[in-house]
Figure 1 (cartoon, rainbow, N blue to C red):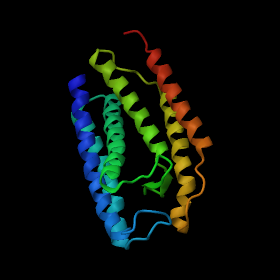
Figure 2: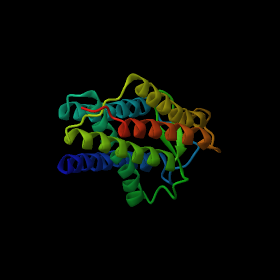
Figure 3: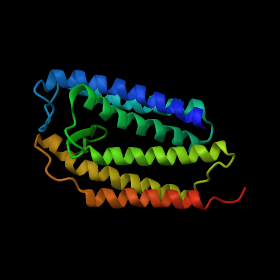
Figure 4: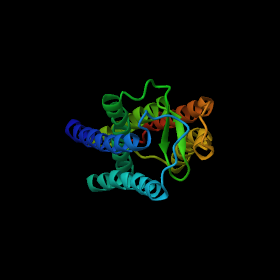
Length: 211
């Protein structure tokens, strides 16, 4: 398990560097004085490439997961680990090369599909830590010969939890469309959504059927 997890960490860190490099280039072009809101509109062809690149990133992560495991829950575990590591080290590399973000409260545009996601840096970092924890827990059980069984009602609750978290990013995402500076992050939506998901997962982890 340790070797497996270590290589997933390496993959996530390396891809975090690749992602940071692309963003560094874009910011040098569109934000020569430093990234800030309101967002600068790019040319349509550049924006389209960015959207396709984001989708391709998800495809690469899922492809890795599919190559490593056969069971869906284990594939999702790999995806969660590499996604979480990638996202955290993306910010670490931006801090290293651009001295950005200034703090965990700094606003960032997080994602573009299917609508801009906007929030301070701290919520995606917290989500990434949760994803790494959940993914590691699932694979740890797998390598101990006890694959986790997640029932349909659990999947539904976890998906609803993810949806609530996403909504907390979509609400301030309107600032990108309006070309304004986001003023308020709905943490009171984010925190219950994340907590709910972690509770559901931990409950399933602690009450696995005997095999």
